Structure formats: C-alpha cells, structure tokens
Image 1 (cartoon, rainbow, N blue to C red):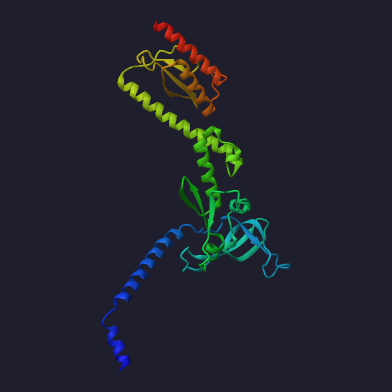
Image 2: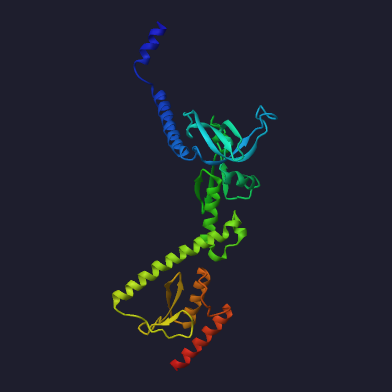
Length: 311
C-alpha cells in the first residue's frame, strides 16, 4: 500500500518546493551554458604546422616523462580525446621539434606559443601587474585548471585573452595611445617594442591629421574663400586676412602631404603648434623655437606690439 500511495502522489505532479528547486536548477544550468559559450572561445586549438614550444623527454634518461625541457617545434598531429569540456575539445598533440626529434601524445596544457613561453617567466616574476591568469580548479579540463586564460584590466574594464602575448601587446599599445611621445621604455611590459609602437602611433596621428585637413580643405572650398595669403616670418605659419579673430593658422608637411593643424589669434601660437606637430610626427621640418621659453618670449613681444598698434 505504501508503494501504491507513493506512486499515486507522484502522478499528481511536482510539489511547490520541488518546482522551486527545479527552477533554480534550470536557472543555474542556463547560466553555466552562457558561461561555457564564453569559455569555448578562449581555449587555443592548435593546427598541424603551427609553431609552438613543447616539452621533450629524453626516452633514455626520462622514459616516464617526469622532467621535460621545452623546445621550439611544430604540431605534427592532433588527436581529440574528449569533447565534453565546457572550455572546448581536450586534445593531445604530436610534436616535431626543430632539431628533428619527435614526441607523441603531448597533453594540451603543456603546449604554448613560442612567444607565450618566453613571456611566462616574466609573468611568474609578477612584472605584468594589470594582467591576471584565470584558472578553474573545479574542472576536469587540465588546460583550464593549470593554464587558463588572461584578463587585462584597463580603466576598470576587463579584456580577456587566450594568449599572454596578446594581453601584453594590448597593454603596451594602450599606454602609447595615452602618453604618445612621452612614453618611456619603463612604461611598457615589452620595452623592446617601443620604437615600433611609436611608429604605429605616429602613422595613426598622421591619418587623423590627414582626415582633419581634408575636411577643413573641403569646407574652405565649399565656402569659396580660396587660398590664404602666405606671409609669416615663421615656418609652417600662414596668414588668412579673411579671419580677423584667428588669422594665423599652422600646417606641417609629412609623407608628401600638407596637413593643416589649426587657427590661432597669435602668430607665435601658430608657430609653436607647428613645432609640436613636427615633434609628434617626426617629419624633420625646421622648428621655429628651440625652447618653450623662446615661444613665451615671442608671444609676449607680439602681445605688446599688438597693444601698441591698437593705441
């Protein structure tokens, strides 16, 4: 009878408490599924021919694979071991090393890109203070448990990366974009890239100036004002007598193109703006002032001259 009562009660549907538990369970399942979608994009999937840094065990001295040494090589074969991990397929790799040696069935958590392997030593020394390694100690996926992915925090915003190299590059590029020509090697995680980053930054600034110059030129042409009168004692400074409030404007030539910087009331200010653009772009044009003090003195004299003319 007790068995029959139990069966009959179960046919009546879930009790309120059971229904709530089921709802919570389904909600957690949906959240896990959403998180797993994010995780799936972060795990590296190496292909045959990819350059990597992998472990090598000497078959004579280390047959049980206890003390590996990492060398450069290429992926020779990929074997999918398990597809149930929320982080993506679990794989093993065969590696052909640059010196000709070969090793099979290497777990994915022991394989790195060559650049990440080189940077990993700096990461363990805590040199990358804005980057943290995110691992999952509760998973059975050894890549997620032992290697994980990287999170860079910039302006309180988190950026996720599969590779440490990409996180470091993003950090250094953001520093140069913020500090510009004032960037020092000490500001970067990879100081050796300063020259290349500054070159990229100058090219971007040049493109911005080019777009701005084209827009200003288009507006001038549409207004029918024509070309300005080029009469200034300073390099890269021109006089436009049609604008009494800001009759001086500065420009600079870079990569065979002339870029208009802006309009200024004082001739000295336009000359100083030209000098700053020359320094920023590295165009090699002649500077009007050797020091800021020289600029301030010239502006002071210009103000005095204009005041005397008004009297």
